[in-house]
Length: 220
Ligand SMILES: O=C(O)CCC(=O)C(=O)O
Ligand SMILES: [Fe+2]
Image 1 (spheres, rainbow, N blue to C red):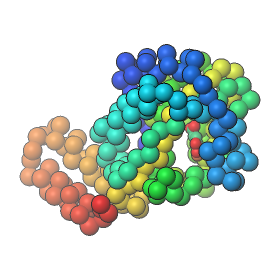
Image 2 (cartoon, rainbow, N blue to C red):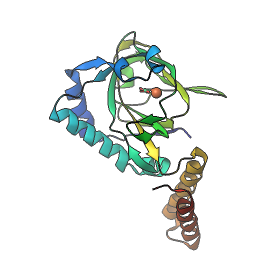
Image 3 (cartoon, protein in one colour):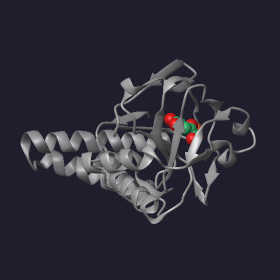
Image 4 (tube, rainbow, N blue to C red):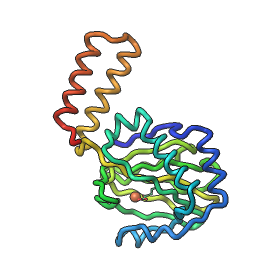
């Protein structure tokens, strides 16, 4: 399942981040790529430098992890601290699959949180390469896409301006993507039923099934 979530970052955090990134130090992103991704990765990454950087990363991770849609779509067990990347003219990240294990966690879900206004740069779409064709994404600043870490994907070349993004990975309590989607659908349905009709007997039954499927499937 691919899911786009609008406005994950609060406006004050996006403003602090934009100010910080305007004159922050970026380094060659090739350093953190696996051996085959290194052949196609041409971008820059924010170099961890000061306490302010650590605080911004902590605030971004908190905003992502507290988001209710992230919670029900990812069912996170562990989330890596995000990496901030920048692509200026000529940079891109060609077709690759993400490493299966990073920093001691299994990567089930990858995510990109877009940080630059889409009208401020040309190109830089994130393209998901499925067996049924390609789908490309260029989201508003502060919005995020979640996608399965096992899927081939690429970032199209940037031809003008600068694409800024925070990228990260999560291990889910529910390893199987199909099972996560069943839980997501049931949880979404029960919340909408609750909005419309309150705590009905049907709501209680769907809640019971959702919780009991979690008991069957969750690795904690
Ligand atoms: O910046 C993006 O949208 C994705 C980056 C990416 O694919 C990666 O870091 O593995
Ligand atoms: Fe990737």
